[in-house]
Image 1 (cartoon, rainbow, N blue to C red):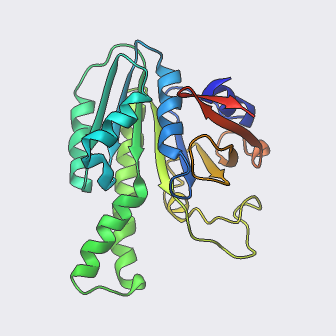
Image 2 (cartoon, helix red, strand yellow):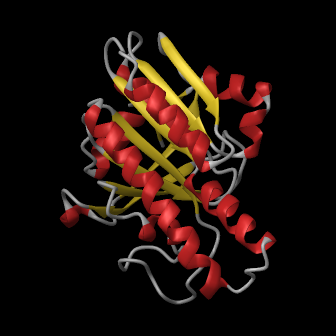
Length: 237
């Protein structure tokens, strides 16, 4: 079936200029699913560019791990520790010509928020009501520029986010208890918001993907599909 087949069952239309948001707990396979989705969409002759903001992207072994899931002709896995680095690489992509289809992955938006938050806290702004108004505009700026780049290059865009906080008995859009705080702040840029979950963190454990929000087809929100990672692809379970 593959990742594209799983997304199709959820009612997600994977096309040029579309931006998917994937969120979920740590070590659930968000980056792997994003890499497989991007690879399947562009095909072997296409290109995938990853903007890796998380610290483990500074590790060459981790970059090679992600590259291993990118079964494409041209692939770039960049380490972007600060928002300025993300903007720099986006400018490079904007001026580069790519043959075939192109997919862009921003992994992850949450680390950009953490980077900005830590910067302001280090300056003595420890109250959330004080530093959040300074952090949120940067998230808007990054995702808006990313969406513009996806549109201009006629690419597929995927934004990875973390979601570990809960909303108690409250449900986001009546679907999930996990509060997609990052996604809510950048929802203006997303066409689809997907929740990836698993009972175990090991990569061979079953996964569940839920369509939490759809700008293009809200009537199918709440659909779920279970799958497993197998041989660097996705199979429905």
